[in-house]
Image (cartoon, rainbow, N blue to C red):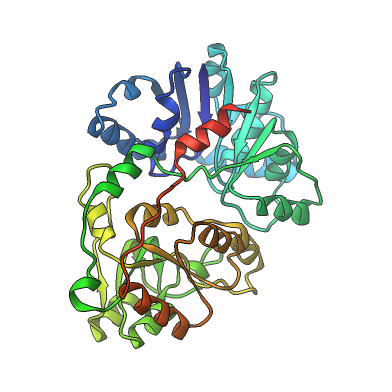
Length: 393
């Protein structure tokens, strides 16, 4: 079986090995933005660590790059709402048509160009089956998203909440879909991480240790797309006031405009219980997984304000991908008992995590957690489970 995979891949590319390693898979061709090629370091390192080198030979990577003229022309086509000439922006797709794929699989978000790729694929591979897996978006109408929802041969969403989300946004009924999360991790990495014995920091000082694992930490919530949920300052202050230690692992800490210091380093300078840690490189065999396993609980997102409707509505259905890192490391995910409806459902179903109604409630639950034996989740869904759903389409 030959598969063409298009669109964003995100850094945890090792998860694809649960698909690629299957006997019925002959080859998977990835067609990606050239900026995402670096993410396949995770795939290659994990394949070598688990001695699965044959999985490296079963994939190939084709890249595209849009120049500035392409970018503005694409914006014009969206305004004109025409499918014509989308293939001009993805010239490499035409050369792939000769491979006669058994399945074309597109992923994953509204921001990674994959909806535009869908428009091109629909034109170029007009007789091929197209499966679309989808995750991050916003409660804003987008022409290419609407077209993708209408004309995909099959759709895969992380949970049922997306069906109502799109029904309210576009007034459409979606009947052909399955449920699976494309962020589920590689099964062998899950098992390896779970096997690592690490003592919790709270065992030494009898104080809860919470972490924040994030790509960005914003010093104010002014960013239009995601500002609220990456603005961790308020919850950090509340935790510090309750004698809880906070460890911030962020790829980037972003200062407010016209400030020489960011809010996190400023706060850490006043309170030693906020520790600015190095970003974690969570790849198979990495000692950084052992660092993450030291913590009792992990914050997912800050609370989202209803006034930011496009983000607020998405937050109801979104399941943050970091929840799966927390699960395999025995770190209890923390979520406010508010807008994150589907995340709360996941935590309740797994009985692994903390849902809090107030900061005093959160502190009470954290101190109770460290007074008992550390919890671990027995069954963690992996990309093997996602692959089963994908290949059923």
